[in-house]
Every structure is written in C-alpha cells, then in structure tokens.
Image (cartoon, rainbow, N blue to C red):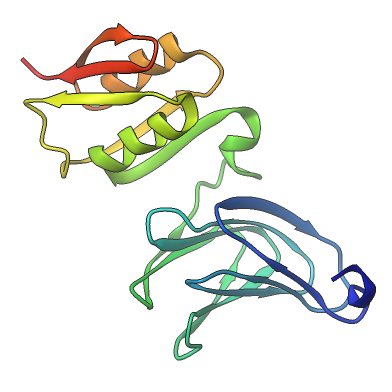
Length: 177
C-alpha cells in the first residue's frame, strides 16, 4: 500500500524476486509458505514448487514459517528452505555469488529432481517434454541460459546425461538410451 509505505513496508509474493532493501523501517515479504523480515540487506525469495527458499547475500533476514511457529535468522552467505511448514536445509550459499544467477539470465539449481528441472525449463521456454526411460525423481544439479533454447537444452540434458529430440517448437522428447 503506497499510502502507508513509509510506516509499513510490506509486499506479498508468489514466484521469485530479488530485493535490495535500504535501511529504515521494517521490510516484510509475505508468502503463503512463510514471511521474511529485514531492515537493510540484499536477498532472494523463491516460492515455487510448494516451498519457500531464501538466500541472504548481504545483511541479515529473519524467516518465519507460515504459522510463525519456527523462525531462523540468516546472515550473508546463508540460505534455507521451508517445506510443509518445516524449516530445512540451512546451508551456505555460494560465496562467489553476490546476487542470484537468474538476474543474468541463468537458471541454476542444485540438488533438485529431474522433474523440477524439466518443469523450470518448460515454464521458461513454453514447451512440454515427453519423457522416456528417465527416473524423474533422480536428484541433479543444472545450469542453463534462459535466452537460447537450443544451447539451454544441451546444458540441461548434459546435467543428467540424457538425450533429446525436438518434435515440434513446443514439444521435446527427452530420454536415456
């Protein structure tokens, strides 16, 4: 609410956003999975795949689950996930990163299922996959550019040793032999 912004800095979020917050009044990001509260910092919030992921790049953020029964304070270089209202995976973020890779047009995810990786690709490029002989529950790490579908397909499938065949501009067969 712009009228009360100077008194209460609060935004609702579905999806993913990167924030650089100037010091001042409390700033809150509210999602259906939990809340992030900060004073002055740089951080990323992602609410996809039925979970909340928060990465703190600078300063400190407080993360609460949706019913505020659990909270965790993150400092620069730390990240966490909230899934099914439980705080999980407090871990160090990449020290090399000072902001999220998606700001440079790169999709990057570590330790996700092949199903999640394919869903991200489908969302970014507006395609559908036909999957053959592939365990979509397998955990992988993937990186691909979001501005060149052909190169991105090579990067994506290379991440889990699969092959692909473009059936049409909107349909791709992905498989392992």
